[in-house]
Amino acid sequence: MKCDRSMLLLYAVTDRAWTGKKTLLQQVEEALAGGATCIQLREKELPEEEFRQEALAVKELCRRYHVPFLINDNVELAVSCGADGVHVGPGDAPVAEIRKRAPKGFIIGATAKTVGQARAAERAGADYLGVG
Image (tube, rainbow, N blue to C red; front, side, top):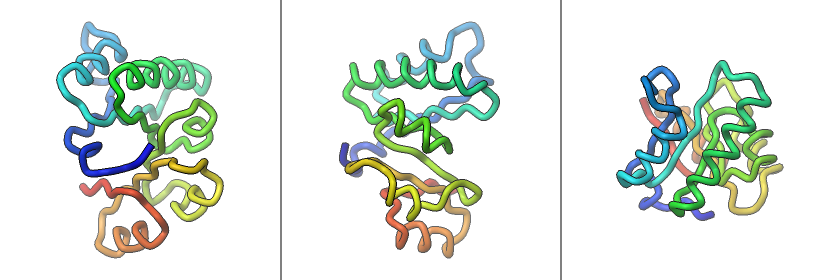
């Protein structure tokens, strides 16, 4: 999948703390139905196999809506489950390293908290930056 501006119009990042009475999948589907143009699955505490199962389910929802699906931090999971890409922070695998081993068309987003980090991520081949 190609990364372009339209993908970044309404970029939704999951957060299990906000699910309330709904499941994460229900909330992702509501986001997609409401116009989300990209979904990033962000799980910091979920055991690996549960994360994999959740990733596969979210990927299927995204496919139905023709919306890119990215996984936060976990490059291996993103590649193995067929996600469209990954989003990494300064403490994760370097963008240039991911680019070398990622499949063609794999989207790589990078968090940048400084101008220097932004420039470095761009030079390394990041498709987009998350700034905050």
